[in-house]
Amino acid sequence: MAKHDLSIVRGTSNVFGLAITNADGSPFVLEDNQTLVFAVKRKLKDEDRILIKKITNIVEVGTYYLELFTTDTAELDPGKYYYDVGLQYGGSVFFNVIEASIFEIKPNISQLGDGA
Image (cartoon, rainbow, N blue to C red; front, side, top):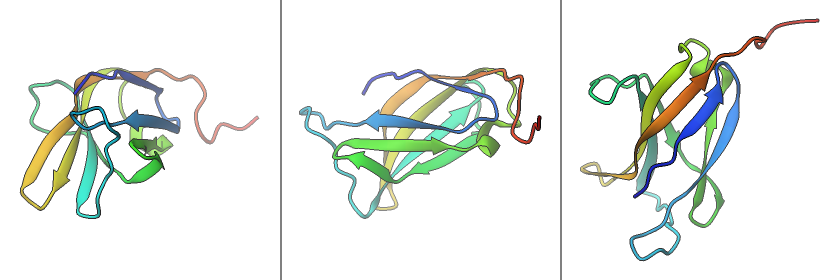
C-alpha cells in the first residue's frame, strides 16, 4: 500500500489511472463481489466524507480508472483534502489499497457553461 497524491482543477472532469497490485506484486483483479471505493475528506480526523465514488472501470488487468465529473468538485473550495481507496467485498470485509493521500483541488478561472 502506498500514497499517491492527486490533483484536479475545481469543476473539471478528469480520469485517474490507479494501478493496484497484490502483496506479491502481481496485478490485482477485481472480482464480481468486490468493489473499489474512492473517498475524500476535508481533514483526516473528520468523520464525514464529502465525495464517494465507486471504481469499476478497468483499463487493463490491475489498472482501474477513477472518473471524476465537473459536478464532483464544482462546489468544493480549492485546497488540500485527503482521499484513500478501499476494497470492499462480502458485505463485511474492507481494507485500504491506497492509503490516505493528498487530493488537491486547484482554483479555476473559466467554468463549464462560460460562453464566448
